[in-house]
Image 1 (cartoon, rainbow, N blue to C red):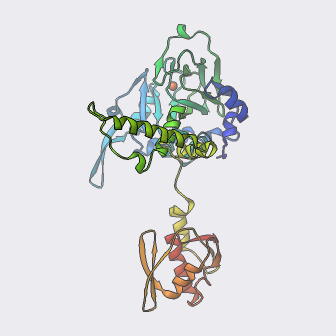
Image 2 (image 1 turned 30 degrees about the vertical axis):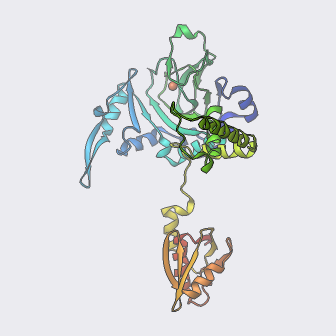
Length: 400
Ligand SMILES: [Fe+2]
């Protein structure tokens, strides 16, 4: 799959943030290069149906505007003596789809690495929580009635087509879901048949209605929850009132003394002084970074050297492999009878003192070959030890 950027979604970022962000919906035809079905295809959804463990609440079904009871398409299966009460019955899901149901997969970013990455691009840019929901709709179905959602959305069409009508947000914007009649809304601001690769942006409270007509449709709805000034300021204040100065428990009941009131005034002044001293660019960077890691649409924290694949590759490490000292702290404990204790990530291991000396003498980033890492040892044992310390994360493979 193409590695998409935020600019692929929105085009000129300056124009997007000046004219559309938090203001009005935007349409970009043919926004995504490459083959958009690689983001999510009919066939990948078939595979997910066959993974019966992708079950409610990850998968839901809507028919004629109402949710279908999970009992209709799930059953209890037993796995190693444990009952899984809501495992999906694939043939029932297919029956429902044939009868016109829309199938919805929520938080697919928890399941599909490529969608996790797709969401991460948005989370990284906005410092906002993102969540990816996929909608599969059979041809000829009216979707939901016009409504608005309490979240910002990017809509990405990946297979088939879907007609979307969007109206500009009207009146006071509310953070709860709302429905409309066609008469209330009048002419839509955007009326478009979305095709694979097309993208829509909907700020929260944008009335919209969508329907698959000629073709079946797969689209992703990436929900974003940007934070208001209120939430950002709350975080800043929270960070400023940490510490002993603000940690006493005052008695504020009706028989409180005057001193409580003057103490309160003092605390407010102390907080005001701290607020005034805030370094705005640094604090905004901190808030951006914290927003990138909000649950549940968190970016992946699986690092390349955490993977099973990486561990398996370490098993094959040869004498010519080059290793590097990582930043993982290594503490030196007691030495006794030629052996030294090393403490790493909470594990204590006793190794020959010569090995401990070599390891603690390596600068972070310094490269060595597996064969010569431990010069006092025969090549084979040097490689074995290198493998062991790579598994612990003290060393990493620089080149094989
Ligand atoms: Fe919606």
